Length: 255
Ligand code: 3PY
Ligand code: MG
Image (cartoon, rainbow, N blue to C red; front, side, top):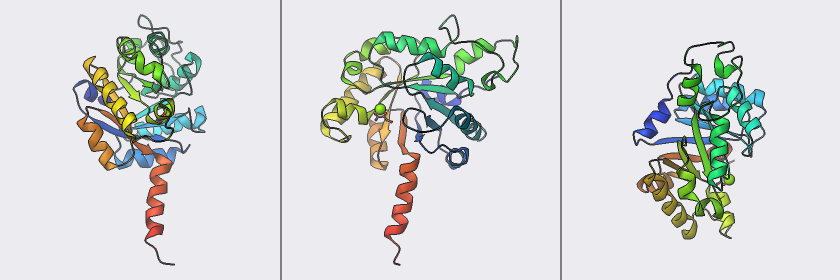
């Protein structure tokens, strides 16, 4: 039986959390980040190379430290979402949601009936390998799994109120990179136009009682986004954190 999702609970009660994206396909690297104390790690199967087998080991490595493993799927595809769920991930991140209908499709793929139509097998890691007839398994999955939908384009921004009205969403995450591209200033994630758009959308999301999320580039960004009401913050990406740490050492070393 799935344990209570403490991250989901914390967000519901207005608390904040910090995590990162994982591009490095390694259970060891994921374990290091969990031991270090990040609240969550998102295994990135949109941009990263992890297979489902590796992702399942990464989920174990994060969960073992009582941190929250999430998987970002490559697109809003119910079959990929199902396989990601069956690893035992505590939530799914779905990129580039543009309409309420797409948001509803994602929620339906993540939840069992009556809230959705997630494919059913009691034999996977998510269900404890043989949870046939286990009391409350379905209710428990529906309650504890986190639904994180990403809005990262003009269409999604335009439809944000309708998207946020879809029941079952825990976090709406604004992707600054794709948004900067959509606004015609690719990669300029701290440009005033991008920051303003994220702040405006954050207010709309929060007004609907849903936690908002976005990506921070540095410690100042974390403070800025927290002040703007962002509860779910990703700090860079695992390989960027490693790169920064190594570059900092090298820059101070005289050969
Ligand atoms: C974006 O900024 O577009 C993202 O998807 C964040 O990973
Ligand atoms: Mg993106």
